[in-house]
Amino acid sequence: MRRPTPLPAPERKPPEPIEAAAPPMTARDLAAERRATGDAPAESPVGGLDPSASTEPIAVVGPGATSGSGAGPAPAALPGLGATVTTAEEPDPVRLRDVWRASRARRKALRAEVRRFTVRARRRRAIWIGAAASLLVLVLGSLGAAYSPLFAVENIRIIGAEQLDTAAVEAALSDQVGTPLPRVDASAVKAALVAFPLIETYTLEARPPHDLVVRVVERTPIGVVSSAAGFTVVDAAGVALSTTEAAPANQPVLTVRGGVRSDAFTAVGLVLRSLPEPIRLQVTAVAATSPDDVRLTLGGTGTEIVWGSAEDSAMKAVVLEKAMISRPPADVSVYDVSSPLALVMS
Image (cartoon, rainbow, N blue to C red; front, side, top):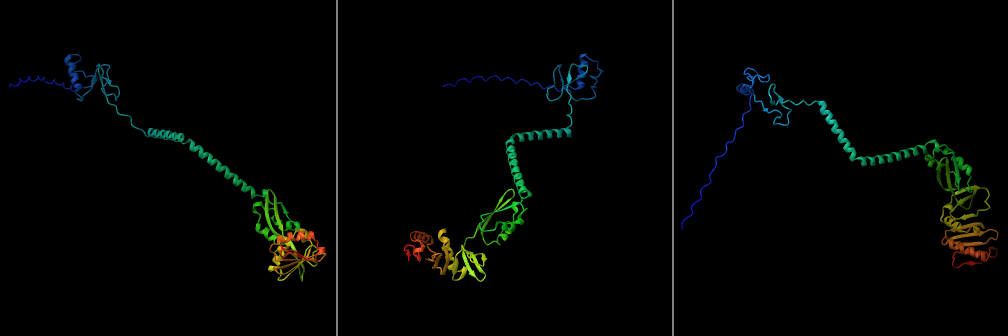
C-alpha cells in the first residue's frame, strides 16, 4: 500500500518590520531642518533659543494639539513656530496655614456627625440631669426650710390627759419652744415627762408649722396602799401615782401580803382590771395572801367575793355580773366564783 503524498507546507511570510519610534527632536535638529528647507536663516535662533545651547529633547506637537500627558499645564508655544512645546512647572509648596485649616474643617465635620448620631442620647441625658437637679433642689430646699425658724415650735398641746395637770406638763416642756420641729430633743422631753407618774406612755407628733403634740396614756389606778406616809394611789404595776393623808373615796384599799412587788399584788391588779366598771366602783377593799387567794369586799352591804386565782378572770367577771343581777348583794353575803362553772352564793 502506497503512502499518500504529504501536503506542501504553508508559506511563511516574513514579519513586517516594526518602525522604530523616532527619537525626540532637539532644538539643534529643528534648526537644521529649517535651514534645509529654507524656512529660516541658518544663523537665526529658534524662538529666541540658541540651538547649540542645549541638546535636551523638546516635545513638539502640531498646532491646536496638546501634549500626551494630561496632568501637566498647557504646553507653551515657541515664538515664530506653529508648534507647542510642553514645559514642567513645580507644584506650589504646602503651607502650615493650609494644613491647619484642613485639620480644623475635618474636626468640625467629625463633631457634626457625632452630634447628629448622638442627639437622642444627649436628650435623654439632659432629661435625667434635669430631673436629678430638680429633686436635689427640692430636698435641699425642704431641709433648709425644716431646720430654719420658719418651722419652730410655738405651741405645745397635751392630748389624752384626764387626771394629769396639762398646764404643768406644758410648762415642763417650755424649753422646746423656739426649736425647729425636726430638732426637738426627744431625750429632753423624756426627762421632763418622767416627773409625772401618771404618764404611762407618750408619743410626740410634729404638726407644721408650729405645733408640737404630746399624746399621753395615763396609768389606771387600781387602789390605794396604806403606809406610814399616808395612802398611796398605785396602778396595776405598783407604780405610786400620788400620796394623800386620807384614803380617796373612789379607790379600794389594798391589803396584799408581800407588798406591791409580790405575785399576789400582780394577781390583784389583773382581777381589778377585769371587773366591769359598775362592779369595780362598788369594791371598797381587796385582800390577797397569795396569788390563788384574792378576795373582794363590796361597800354598803359588806358582801364578800371569793375570786381565787387570776386565771379565767374574764369568765368569772361575766358569771359574777349575772349573779348580782339575779340576786343583788343585799341578799347575798358571799359570791364564790373561784370555780366559774360552779357558782356558789350564800
